[in-house]
Image 1: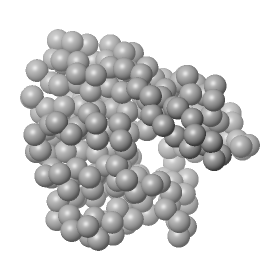
Image 2: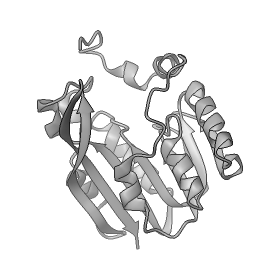
Image 3: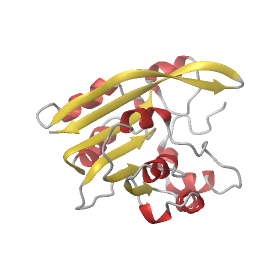
Image 4: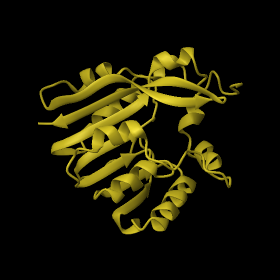
Length: 212
C-alpha cells in the first residue's frame, strides 16, 4: 500500500477525506459491531451511550439493539446517512441520535452511562486532551471503553498511521489516573483477522474504566 500522505496525516481527520471515503456504494466497514467493544460492554446494564467516531454505526446499532439509548457522533455526514439507514432497517431508528461533529472538539452538557470509541487514532498531545474531554462525559458509575489498534501490529500489517499514534491501554489509563476511575480492562487483546486473504492474529489496545 502506498501512502500519498505519509508525512502529512492531517487528512485522516479532515471531514472531506471521510466524506469521500463513505461516498461510494460499497460499505467501508463490515456493518457488524466491533467484537472487542461488544465483549467489554455486554455485561453492562443498558442506559444512555455515546459512540464517538461511530462510522457507519455498527457499534451504535448493536448498543441500541441491546437496550441502550445512543448518541452516535461522526465527522462524515455520508457515514451517518449509512448508519441511519441501517438503524431503520433493523428497527432501532428511534433509539439512535446521529450527530455530525468533529470528535476532537465536540462537547455537550449531557452525561452518559457509557462512552465508547473504537479505532479513533489521534496524534500525541491531541489524543490525551481528547481522552480527558470524552472521559468527562461519563456519568458517575458509568463506563468508558476505548479500543484502538495496538502498535505491535505495525510489524505485520500496513497501516496509514505512524506507530506512535497507537496508544497502549496502560498509557491511556495513566492519563486519567485512578482517583476517579476503577480499571476494568487495560490490556493488549488478540483478535483474529483476515489480511490479503491470510488468517492472522492482530491485537487491540483495550481500555475499560468505570467512574467511581
